[in-house]
Amino acid sequence: MQISTLVFFSLALAFGANALAADAPARRVIKPQAYLSPVQAQPLFELFQSEADPELPWGHVALRRLDQQPNWVSIAWHVQWRHTLDWPDGFAKPTSDARQDRLVAAGAIARFTPQSFINGHEWRGLLQGDAPPAPRLAEVGALTANIYPSGVIIVEHEPGPDFRHIGIELVANLALLAHPESRIVPIGPAAGVSYLASHSVILHEQAPYDARLKRWRFKLSQEVLWPLDDPEPRLAIWIEPAATPRPIQSLLLTVKPKPPPPEED
Image (spheres, rainbow, N blue to C red):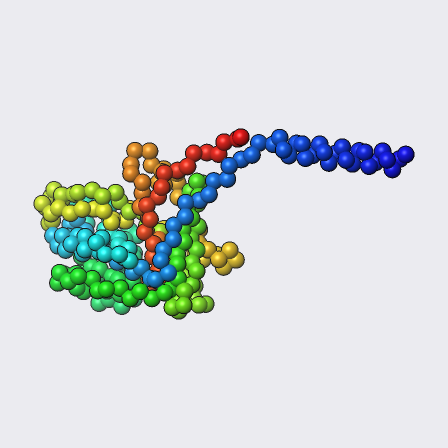
């Protein structure tokens, strides 16, 4: 009799648990926004410029050419050291100066504007009006960026057959680019110069590699990723050795609108 009672109560508890589970509200799982680069390397073109420089249009010409070619990621850093009292460049930031100084220290002769680098190597064809050289499409592996509703961005890299950096510490870089805007410098040495500020870096962050999770992690605010009245932001992401600024793979993406919050069924 006691055994039968125990069996009865066990069955009742199991049935009740299953009923509660069936009645529990189901939550819709929100997947992150996923972005993927090709397996072939996408070169990073870095332009250093200033609205205080009359040679500003040269850089704009190079950026416009690259926009018409696939497999390129192009960004423009506005340096602060070219500031003048007449016209301080609104896009200029100390991080731009620091980036240019690192690249120059890695192999260039001197810093100047406009100055350009392709995967960390100085390219002098800019002021000659040359077209950037065709990229070498080495299969270094795909770069993945997953953007979560919380603002967390997870970057991962799957090495390809041409990846040559096994065992080397890598860092990931993230640059928020300005919305396309036609600008005319009103005063100063470059007064009257017009250009399209569509690649200008307005925010830059760098993240170390998490060897345990095999990824890089960024966290941006909701206002940056999903502004209320501005177009969707564009992000440039690239990885490079921590010791030397020589980009290996890069990715350019436009953030999609934020999904609505999950609802209970």
